[in-house]
Length: 180
Image (cartoon, rainbow, N blue to C red; front, side, top):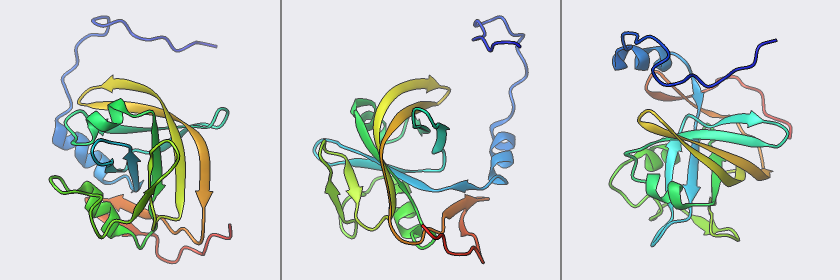
């Protein structure tokens, strides 16, 4: 059995880079679930829409997500120790769009939220959420990969997921209700 090892810089022959548009095009055809990540901030909380949230480990329960180094929420994520990952339902495209919009106060009305102990902002209208302790921030190209330990999982009601595919928010038509 072989063990994966980090590759030393410069030890891999330089390859022509994949053009960004070609790379983006490949992933436009790959649907992703939509989440909103929120963190404490000063003077207001911060948050952003993410399609990069994935489960990483069952034992211990870990997730990871990425955030652009140029994102307006990056400084708040960098400085946070806790976060909430909100898994958006099919009827919550408005929340996804609000938290994906630059230059606005994402926590102004109509957003309704409350602060959990520790200061993490919890969106009132989202039924499935994970309380996270941020564990590592790893520079990765023009983004940062964030790993987090899941401290709490709360799910209420039916959760038909909101998806992002080919530059558009979508739903799974005909998906039976989830009997939680």
